Image (cartoon, rainbow, N blue to C red; front, side):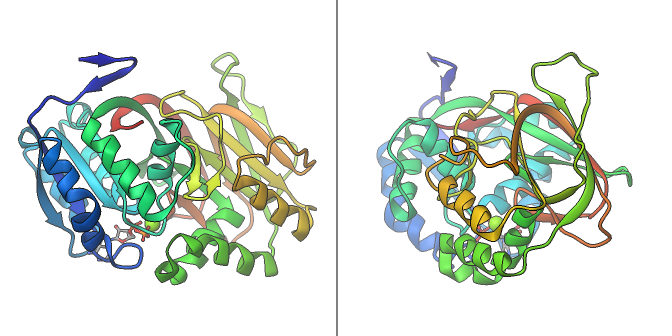
Length: 335
Ligand code: ADP
Ligand code: MG
């Protein structure tokens, strides 16, 4: 059945629910039982619970699983567990079919950016915490499946991985990592991490090139500046529950929203930028150090010897990389 671009999951519907009991404040399982379980039962959705015991447990499971048992794979955690699942699916020999498995997200972690994005696409007013969980629970019960863009990231070592949310270098990547230790504060970890990193602001040197979304296939643009405070590539709207980084992004617009902030920005201006991002108004208020471009691919070559690069909030190898969007490669239950 068609609903706009979406396809309805058939009923009855069988979901595999992957829960990371350590995510967020360590309450993902309790929250699922109290807020979502009954809703799913009433909607005619049967679910099998799989509790992860360690990092990469879910990745190994989906890599080897008989996927025909499930109509959807649902992640109740932060973005980190979905990152595992997507990469596990794409490591299979039948990846082309496996990545068509509908995916669902329930916010159970401290970094719930995709859940916030999915809620945002439903055009409902912003909600946080347990209200966001209930909203995502309803969207799951409704079961409308849409295409979702993925981005492949390649390294000179030959390593390739897939990303559904973000690629960050500099300030945002530093905050991702810094804020890990504040995970028990829940979503507030990013606010705390931002303030800590602002206190010791670094400049990173590197080369950045991109392929504009609208231009001809080989028209790479070389960014003239080489001193950056941050580079952030986003393919969904939210960077965190309360950070609307790319307000005009949609699930499968085929666009990488590239942002970079050049050196010379004051701490006050950078803080203002992140405060404006809470409402998604950072692009309306002009800041000469912030650049936004809609791109299809990008190349980053860090020249500073030390630094952090994150993909979907997870640390990856530090060095040159190339990223490219694959429009609508995955499928997501969304608003
Ligand atoms: P959060 O938003 O709280 O960081 P994530 O879903 O991002 O939650 O998970 C954080 C990390 O924990 C991810 O790298 C994930 O792979 C890993 N992980 C998954 N299951 C477990 C587990 N049972 N114990 C510890 N770490 C886990
Ligand atoms: Mg995480």
